[in-house]
Amino acid sequence: MNDLDAIVAQAREDFTAAATPADLENAKARFLGKSGRLTELMKGMGTLSVDEKKTRGAAINQAKQAIESALGAARQGLADAELTLQLKAEALDVTLPGRQRGAGGLHPVSRTLERIEAIFASMGFDVADGPEIESDWHSFTSLNNPPNHPARSMQDTFYVDIQGEDGIPYNLRPHTSPMQVRYAHQHIRKHAATFEAAAADASGQTKAPEIRVIAPGRTYRVDSDATHSPMFHQCEGLWLGENVSFKDLKVVFTDFCRTFFESDDLVLRFRPSFFPFTEPSAEIDIQFQSGPLAGRWLEVAGSGQVHPNVVRNMGLDPERYIGFAFGMGPDRLTMLRYGVNDLRLFFDGDLRFLSQFQ
Image (tube, rainbow, N blue to C red; front, side):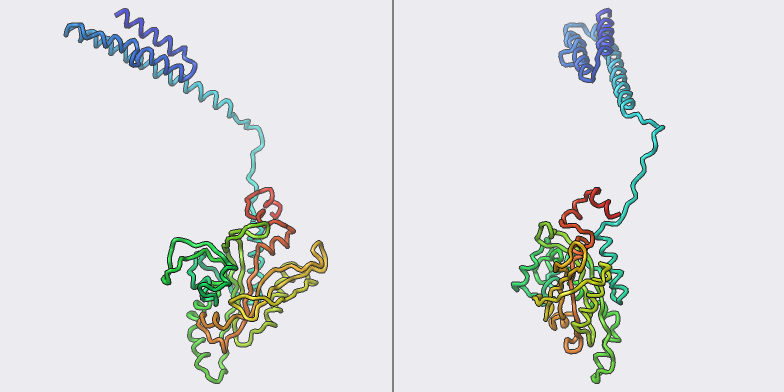
């Protein structure tokens, strides 16, 4: 058995000398591998008698167990040494002051949305929210923008693999205007008795209920540059009643802009334009009388008197219900309020930029 004792002793010596796991595996192969010393001894047992095989086999197995035990101890020793080095490298100086988490805050666009909602709420407007994946009917057709209408190219959008009942795929809404129709339907159902009473009164003495709402939210279009983003925010507004006119639109939006920018010397200009869901339509420009933007006309919104077809799609009589709608970009208002000239900065997620607004 001296040869086996010598092999076990040599294995223990080689395992102890191994400095890395790779060295240890190489040492293991010299003793337990396909051409290892113990393996060769096992191969030579074929010439022995049955009794000698039993005795020799038991001795070899005992030596193998001793080598495997030594191998396991060597592996554990290397692992412990590596852990000790790692803990030493990652040691913390507990006498250093703790690292505190910085206080979070609202995104500048979120601040703008809250500000818009608060201002219009003070004027009696409700705030509506709805789905960002919309049907074609709500996004376009209900807004007097039927299939194949050339105005649709102004609002090229993204489509999803879901088809509506009309066979047209759903889309990521290109504006929050669908919420005007959705809210009108909900409002009419909620106040059905009042609307029915007003409709049944041929004399017109029963005052028709008003619809006054804004719809802020995320929207999507195939557009990207310094002032446009594939994902952006929009806020639509709607006021329908018996005697709501363009004059009311000018008063409401002028008051909003002056309150939002905290400037009474703000001047508004309404330029004739075209939108399929309003007639007549107008772009709204503002001009500051002082500050870095003084004297420049800046476009901030689109607006107009709600088209009769849109009023009908809301389930109302356009001969009785009249009013205005507008749509503005909270992202653009945020840029103007904080003096930022690249919209993409708001959505890059750079905390160095965003922390300036906290």
